[in-house]
Image 1: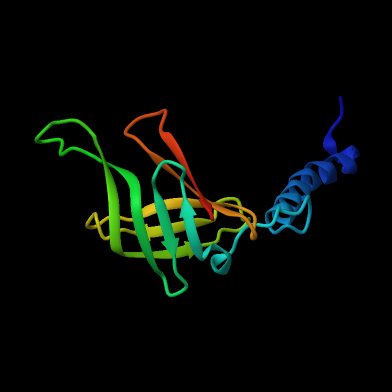
Image 2: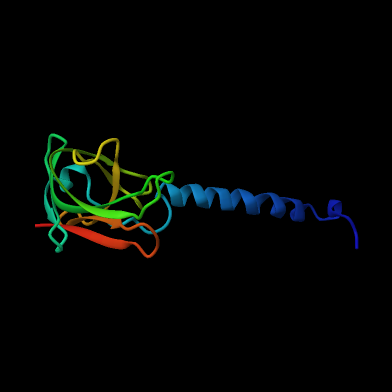
Length: 153
């Protein structure tokens, strides 16, 4: 059989494979290698009025305020009291929003603090393109959840 000492290339190969994989992973994560991500909407692209086609609408304003109308959400029951999950609609003049961009940009999110529900933050996915952004959120208590897509009008 022999020892690895007679085959120094084997040692180098064993060291180079993990190093190459690490560099490829870093290059892909930083978008130096691989295909470019499709353009995603940024914060300034998200300002405007959105509708979900089911009576819900959201208006995101440049100053970080928002207006909600007919946006459906789920209220979880208190485990001590029991009861069922209830769906409600929110209409609030006092909502706020912020934007989080992730790198790589696979999961940009809009955080909405509604005035109709206390101590709550809704996390909506920001998808689409800069010229046609969409906000995606889910309603329900267990899978499959109802997927709602708010499209800018």
